[in-house]
Image (tube, rainbow, N blue to C red):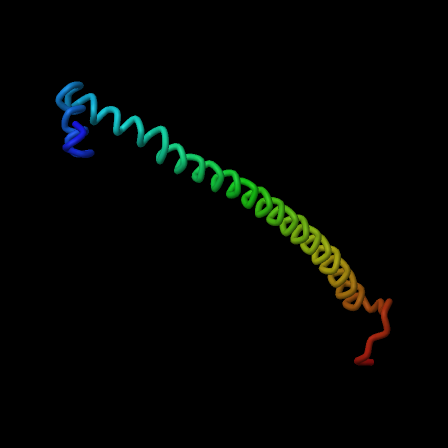
Length: 100
């Protein structure tokens, strides 16, 4: 084994324990090292995405609240304009009419 180097050592291990055991050991090593690192990165990105989604949702809620306030203001202005037009049709000029 000392003369053959790493290839001879690997061959001896495969012969002693069997090919399926070696493949299983390599897969286990991969799962415990590389796959775990990848899962850590994935979970970190998912948590960052969750924070970004929370901020986006809060911004959307703020915009919706602002739009509702604008809609209410427009309804009030529309009611005032309807009242003014109705008063003008009746001949009541609460505001100074620039056309007269």
